[in-house]
Image 1: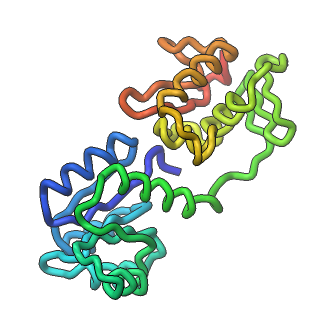
Image 2: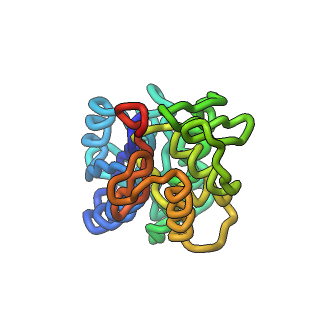
Amino acid sequence: MSATRRILLVEDEKAIRNAVTAYLEKEGYWVSGVGDGAAALEAFDKQRFDLVVLDLMLPKVSGEDVCRALRDSSDVPIIMLTAKGELEDRVSGLELGADDYLIKPFSPRELVARVRALLRRANVAEEPLRDRLEYGRLVIDVSAHKVYLAEEELDLTASEFKLLATLARYPGRVYSRMELVEKVLGYDFMGYERTIDSHVKNLRAKLDDDSKNPTYIYTVHGVGYRFEAPASGGS
């Protein structure tokens, strides 16, 4: 599994493309932006993407035709962007195979939220089912809801346990703060993303993990956190 989710952004208006790219990259996604339908199909043929954000009205090849072509070969999640607000146009987009749509003008923050939701639904089946995660001295017994460091059980809160288990399932994957908020604190949590920083700080203290020279939990500045398996099995 790749460290970051890869998104193909197909939008002919450069200002919108740049703004959306900036918001998505801030959330930790890898974004490839193109300005027409032909370039979109070429990019999709050459690389693997986890989600496509697709403008309906494009030069060279229309958004409708791009959507049809993608659906012929892939079940990649597609969010369609359209300036048309009529019900028939929205229904048409969904019937072509789009999973969601946004009407212009839209908030980039709303688009990011839609992207997170679609990726979350698309990847539920991909979550590993291992009940025991072992990284040298660190053992996470998921089914028993216990964590051991050097054979000594750690006293973790429910949130700290969820945080550690989430990060440790995919070593190397970068999680944005918002992703961790949703997974650890729940989708309905109304607090701030930075709340996750406090949980990370407390968890590091219990793992005896120095933030400046970490063994397990690494800060990815401007994005969030990632877990790394110690090369020597943990010191």
